[in-house]
Image (cartoon, rainbow, N blue to C red; front, top):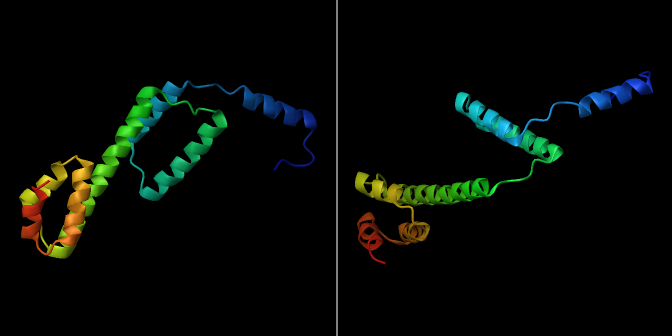
Length: 141
């Protein structure tokens, strides 16, 4: 809030100055963020706060345009996230139910990028009575 005694012309001058701030192209800003990401990793809470502020900034500056390449990258990232999450879910259920997981099985789960197969394995890990039965059934279609 500005003091009540500030003359109106000073307020107008501040608005004009704010409007004359330099405009940075989207590519420059993205390059800067890439550099910052490379140099510094934020803890989870700070990263979420930064993301929220960045979203507000983009909305304020109307930088909502996403290129087709960026859109494909976002979609690929979502798919990879789903696969990674499903891999972790399969391993977590197996570990919870059966204890230590053999190295070969762990490698097979983490090497699989077929989301439908991972979902099927997750259901099997929940339903089957033993790790040996899981090993046998995971190879069947």
